[in-house]
Amino acid sequence: MDQHKMFKFMERFWLVFAIFSLLFATWFISKGNWDQGKFPLFTAFCGGILFGLRRYQRRRIEKASKNDNDQ
Image (cartoon, rainbow, N blue to C red; front, side):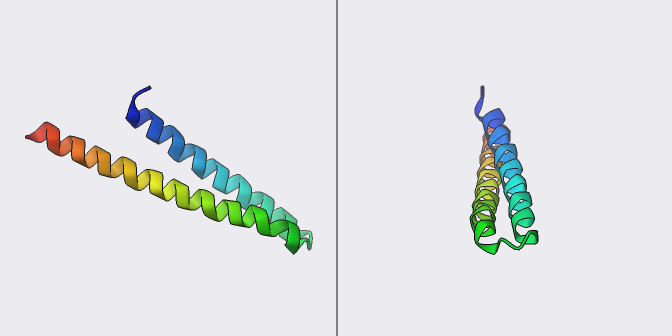
C-alpha cells in the first residue's frame, strides 16, 4: 500500500471514528447521562483533530511531490 492510499485510509478512519463518537455522545447526552457522554464527546474531538492533521499532512506531501515532479 503506497503512502497516498494509507493517508486517505487513515483520514477516512478518523472521520468515521469522530462521527460515531459524536453520535454516541449525542445519544448519551439526550438520555440525560452527561457524565457518560463526556468521554465519547472528548474522543470525537480527538478524532476530529487527528482527521485534520492527517488531511493537512497528506495535502502538504501531495503539494511537495507535485513540485518535485514539475521540476
